[in-house]
Length: 484
Ligand code: SAH
Ligand code: SF4
Ligand code: F3S
Image 1: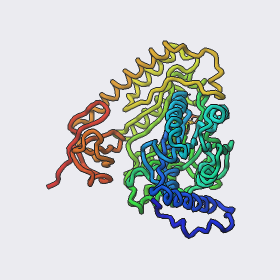
Image 2: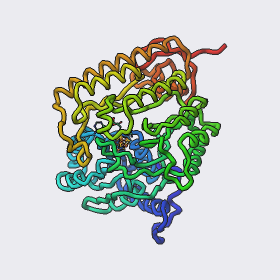
Image 3: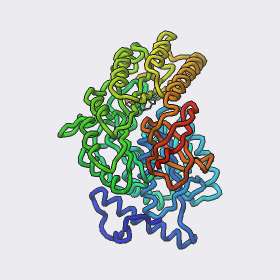
Image 4: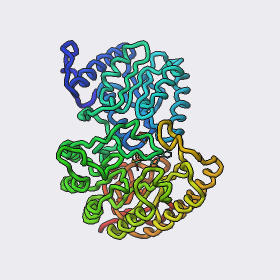
């Protein structure tokens, strides 16, 4: 508790700073006073739990929330039986929302026996007006609601919620501001996500993200490089550059820079040994990027390239701005230029108007490309997106049937591809002690596959050369190479 930052030197009786992030540090100091009072009264520090529901960007935001809570003095735990619980929500598909509503019921039950408890909701789901209305009407026991654009104001909002006896709610429609430089508690010491851009301008017709994350904004390369260098000094060896569409990074900056150029700059930072990125939109993937990936020693041989559908007709209705042939061509070029590339994807089944023939086109691309792995999703209708009002929504039984067929195909192909590495020697970065078997540690190959090897906690964060002895479909058992 009371992490790193010396909040005690901030005088909370002085004038409130107007500038960010100083203003938020002031409120962190204020919240710390509250925590100290709590400790005196209860003989313990208050506990806080941050639950992440969404993607890597959502997870990165959770690290910021955690960093702030720890600095204030909360004891952060994984248990929701805590004094402060915050749900960082996702709304990309309906089931993400349902999960949140379901779990709020449990939290309410716990709060009834622990009335001092505070419950907060933030993240993408809160940016939808109908959600915020429902929370206000049907979940009055929630204490704090905020969205994606004002996440950096968490200390200020928390300070209000700790004092208020009714729901504090602050939601912004959008922002131009990028406020970083607030505390972050990284989940891993040796690897970290780094936001390079926020929002999305693509408006794929099924997708809610542009509505809840706002317009695309790139961070300046200077700020990104400063953050990566700082992470490197802190012992980070692997970074994951994050954005909804990293291939369009930099286009809107005053001094435009391409994503490939940014990668080249990051490659120069000695201590960083592995570079990953997420997500790439096929329409913006440049030949320059393929060249940079092919010649890089640090960019991992993994590319996540969501295709969504293999049918040009459906891709057009999805507003993806590429065709089946263009996707196949791109996949071919990538495989040719980058040896051992692991190509993974996202696929949506049951988009409005999808015929059996369209679905067969998807299966065809799956077979032709031979994805190393694929996330398959059943189309979920998102209120306010163009696809939600399209005619010809597909009946559930048909979608389910196609989904099962696709999943079988995808799993068979990825198992076959994974087998090809059996017996080979590769390097893993060890990430954690295996949760099922403590005599094993678990790491990842450059291509992102998981490998379990005998070992102990002292190996976490180190690179180990291993023989991949046995392939279990989508993961391996391996053995460290011992050098004489
Ligand atoms: N920006 C990324 C994806 C972000 S959302 C990209 O464009 O690739 C992650 C995945 O969720 C998408 O790739 C898509 O496959 C899926 N998805 C998004 N909206 C969806 C919806 N309405 N129904 C089902 N799946 C959806
Ligand atoms: Fe959604 Fe498309 Fe943007 Fe990805 S690129 S976040 S799928 S709108
Ligand atoms: Fe979900 Fe928001 Fe990410 S909707 S997928 S958490 S950007």
